[in-house]
Length: 442
Image 1 (cartoon, rainbow, N blue to C red):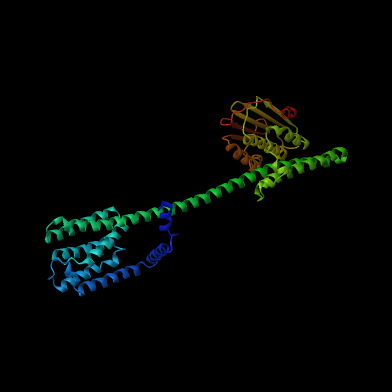
Image 2: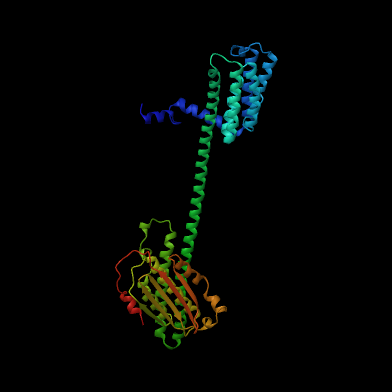
């Protein structure tokens, strides 16, 4: 018979007799777990009936060393063996100690009641199952003492033939209890480990969901805040130009439409991650890449159309970096210019400086100030600037071990400084700045 066949026959899914026995054992275990007191009383009743039959029928005389022991003493010994059984589960060591005292008397007078030996095995099994190793040591000493008294008091041809069989039977009960206990503890540890893994899985899912919500909120803040600020500037400029130069008003309206469509496209791509559709079904703007440093030119063109003069300066040779770092730099520039549009006043100007060293990407965005930005540090202007947008900048930079410093400039205005280390990015050949970057500089 092969190993697979043997496993099939002895598993719970094997032949019907095996399945029936497995179900019976499961029912007994369930009954023992649900009604432990009733189970203990049932076991005690069974042993009581056995003791009654053994003593009343005189069967004990066939194996006793002294068959002339008074029946009253035999009855007392039988009762003494049965009475500790109800406490075998709750107080196994105390029950075993009481039973051993009765057993010592039984061994000394030579009755050698079988019911006492069986009760001793049951209680000894519970000691090994429920108590620590110190209790096993105490129980072992009591077992050896009882066996030694019996073998010494009633010697036969070989002292060891009486001593060792008693020790071996008790040792089997101890080992059986240890095995069952080990299996139970192992199963409990597996259940606890599974529970911990479920908790950790739920926590990881919650953390991932929170991180994703934060990322989406940050992206939406950058996208919506920037485009609405541009649209507001264009609308204000168009309303002013409509009175004197209708052609400029029409250009402002066209720029508003273009900016609005771009904002909708970016929001549609961002919110696409929340859909349940299969990724292969997505098309259009949802598949557009995230903006990078190469898109700074278009960003600055939109800001200029909104009425803010911006000068772009680029230094150094750009090293190969990850899309995430480029997106971070782009969003920091976008948020800084958006804040300038909101808070710097109508006559402010801005400067964007991008410096790329071999291991560091540095971006500085400054404005000439005006309005709230001209207020000293610690006043309302700083509180307005240092809000959700700046917090989002710092969170983005922290993802790549970068830093963002922002605050009023000594000569007036506001400044934002981003520094992103490039160490750890995959090596790739560096190239010159994109021509679009060069064209955006002014």
